[in-house]
Image (cartoon, rainbow, N blue to C red; front, side, top):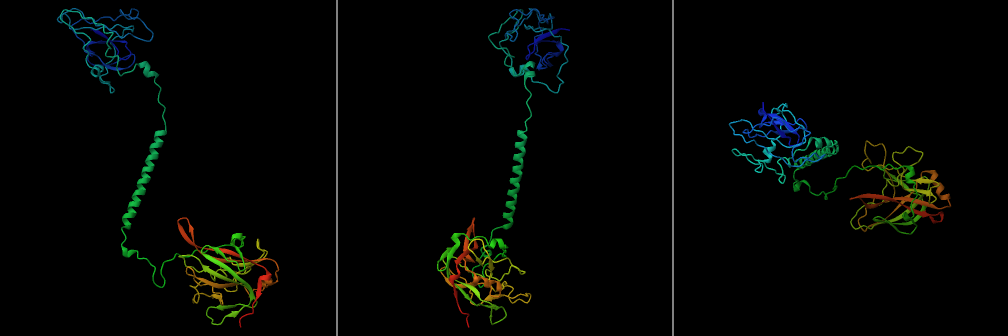
Length: 434
């Protein structure tokens, strides 16, 4: 059987095939590149034996790294009737390979035909009747010079790409963000759909009537004894006859007196005088705001509280102390037990609400209004009598409401503690009312 020889388009080594494999795909035994075997002119005799490796073709010198891009076509001057086969031989320093390789047309990985991708070349010469054509095309590139394939050696030198975790991390991060954003959007849309537009009759301002406006349940501020006795800073202190402003309230201490006060118990018409005299602080209070209404004082601020007794409420911020810094001794609140108005007179309440007669601690001031009121110590507690024997400085700490205070984007009602400094010489004796 005739053997035909041609160069591999990748490694340029000779391959030998039989006539059965012409026009089919073959795998190079050297570089494993799959390529299409060209259809040859069968009018010439096939080459029986390729050039030996030790004898290179004319015009081709052995070089270590490069091969001159030249090739010759040799056609025998023989008629087509003399021989059904033709041969083609390329000059090369490569060895000769027998066509014992199995065809790869059934292989699942089949490369496209090189000649199909490059097209036929018109510069390779043609075969005429009785003529021999020999053409050297060193000046023009051979069809395999610009082939997209790489040599087996170069393929083996290519570094294997390392696996990176960057892309999976980015992918899963974006996926998680997309899922979360979609869930939030769906939730917002569902809420908007369920809420629907509000009709004007659904939100009429509640500003008229006897009890307008809704209020949230009050949260009790459970202060302790240490907090109520923190040092009053200088800017919150004043003296008798000196006015000071705190928030929207102006406070003027008028006098410190020694007198007997009476306590009015809910359910009784006649007040009951205290057993001992009380220390009384008289104040003038003015609302200096433009648009706020509030009550500066409260009976809760000056409620009865004894340190050694069982108390339902924390110690009040209103107290008299010896000294103007850390208290040497403190006297909390006044003589009246406090009870919320909602429970005063209730059949379910065993306690009673008490107020000091004339104290005037529940008056509400409109913008620009002013009032006078007084606070007093507990005349029913014998320990408070030590106040009248003390000769050093004293401080009356008074809790007052100061109006609205901005906190972030909101305004909340707030109170403050002011300190009135006085001495024993400032105390005036006032006879009890008949």
